[in-house]
Image (cartoon, rainbow, N blue to C red):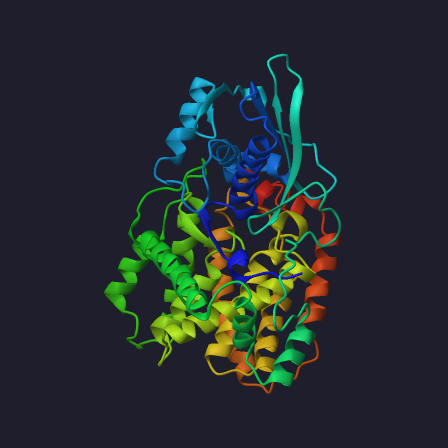
Length: 459
């Protein structure tokens, strides 16, 4: 089993990797099934049921829009985010959909159902897709699960660890933090070097470098887009975009690099994260890292590195991204990055750990210090609930990314001051996160049925 960094990071559409990117990919996968099994031309109707968390918070996350766009043949990485809302609105008003972009079929309200109470057995994010013939008989039916970070598996992939199975043999395999440290000790390589050697199983070193820098360019552009876009976020809460005003205030007060008050740097880090997550909440283009709900943490910390750390360069950016990916893969394989499964500790908590370890490496940390930084990052996010107000990735998600980004920088600096020796290992912290998520009430796992999601509305 192997997982590439380019599977963990993906370019997609907001506001949610599990609730937007995943359903769009599942719908596209269903299209492929129809074509491969010869049922595309015979389909008279298409129906989709969104279950569990997908149904409970799907309207706020744009899950229904994502399914419609996916059935029309769109992909999260290339879909036009400027026209997506209008195209979805046209389908809803006309009750017609262009299946695969070529066949016009009816699509009434009862064909796209968001269940409030129905949950499928494999994962809280379940989706049923089917097509019917002219007589109403089912031609094809498939069940898909969106398991976090945009990853999609079918109904055969049940069990505790529903990760993407890849039989590619990598040079330096590892499945736990302990194994990763052992590889580093045996080879004398850094964590980013280990990841690079493994990535060579799929692509050349030049391709890895170019791909990582491209991902960073998309992240950086997302920050800039967040800086420049005014207005109110969609969804009914009337949450204003704050990033443009904060940027103007900071530019008037102090520009990046002018160290008047050391805590001015923290203000900029907050801004970097909020800019990304406001873009995500508005359905803009983001990099899933490792999810959309936590997409602001890694860009904010990496922007901190490129802006404020002396000697930062492209090599450091690539090393940062590869180190973060190694840590993210550990969370994906040993715990979860799905808020619907373990709460926000699996999203923002995992992102914080990834950014913590990655920054530690580019600051000169050794593998033991990097592992320590990642452990600090997740340990102090344990128990973090996912309780989005109105089912939207806005409150508390946007500010939560900013807080986690600052926390990641602190974790990296704290671990760098030590020798890498610590009591709680990253593996133990991940195991605790998984068990805490299992014990957590369903109300606090992306259902909008508890916590702030209830109390803010009641107040």
